[in-house]
Length: 79
Image: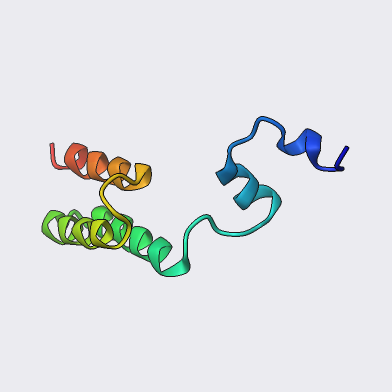
């Protein structure tokens, strides 16, 4: 058996990439786009946050789970 097999067995790929291989699961520019979106969200600039989500969608597509989560977060913040 591989020395890490007990540490990674049953874990999802993101855990393995982040925790074991110490690499990002997203390209740096895309991660920076998400980071900028969340910083904008903190300022309650809903229009700019929506624009940033649209740019992310153009870059990574509409079905990305983190993008969907970001959309829901924006909608909840606007309530």
